[in-house]
Amino acid sequence: MFELQDAFARKFQYLRLSVTDVCNFKCQYCLPDGYMPDGRKSFLTLDEIRRLVHGFAAMGTSKVRITGGEPSLRKDFTQIIETVAATPGIEKVAMTTNGYRMKKQVADWRQAGLTAINVSVDSLDPRMFHQITGQNRFHEVMDGIDAAFVAGFEQVKVNAVLMRGLNDGDLDRFLAWIKDNPIQLRFIELMQTGEMDELFQRHHVRGAVIKAILLQQGWQQKLKAHNDGPAEVFWHADYKGEIGLIMPYSKDFCASCNRLRVSSLGKLHLCLFGDYGVDLRDLLADDHHQADLQRRLREALVDKKATHFLHEGITGMTPHLASIGG
Image (cartoon, rainbow, N blue to C red; front, side):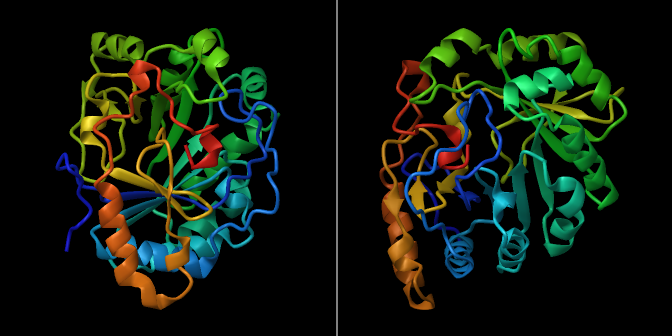
């Protein structure tokens, strides 16, 4: 039965579940000073994750994306994939990763039930990759993408955050890369968060610039599936790969919102740029609170706003993207 619907008739089939906010990279647009521990945090346990995903699935969720921080830093990450994949009603299990553990572990993740993978590669220039991410791991990440294909993934999605003066001139290099590789390259507009005002003003470039170039070169837009994410996806007859554009500042971006977020501490976030989280963890202690969990989810959706208000300069309380999974 489908029950996750808000006051604007948007249906939410897609859960983005953060399992940690720890990350070992120092990306300029997220954690430029590296991860700063904030006391002794207790992230959701495997049993709590099982109960949470079961509650969402019972209300119509069919896709779960496991995020972080860097989710593979959890020692039980493969077991998390198995737990989510085994939940009745869950058809797709995806993850977003910085890719540094893919080469050694992606085959295990695939066997555990992972069906889709997104890897962050902000530049194909190893030196620029190092500058943006704070890590000299470009070749490890690229080897991990190769390993994903060997493990049986038919397509890998690669995320690149557009940044003026850093990687905005890399389009031709990225296009050459995906010409013969089944990679969906996703350009993501830099988003303004509470701690990144100056960086945003200096480096923000609109995805519409890339879209205009693609259309001029004969790329065509694909139709979305019901549980796809926010990307506008384009294909070209001469390319094995695809281009995705995530443009949160575009008109009506939020009209097609189909995803909810739960943080690694068990808080429901109705929007990446919302002002508060709804605590769910007290209902995850045992298996007897499923009805209460579903009731709280229904009640929370009453407060979901029509838009994120980024275009008005309102960024909410999200300090950085790693805090609730980007």
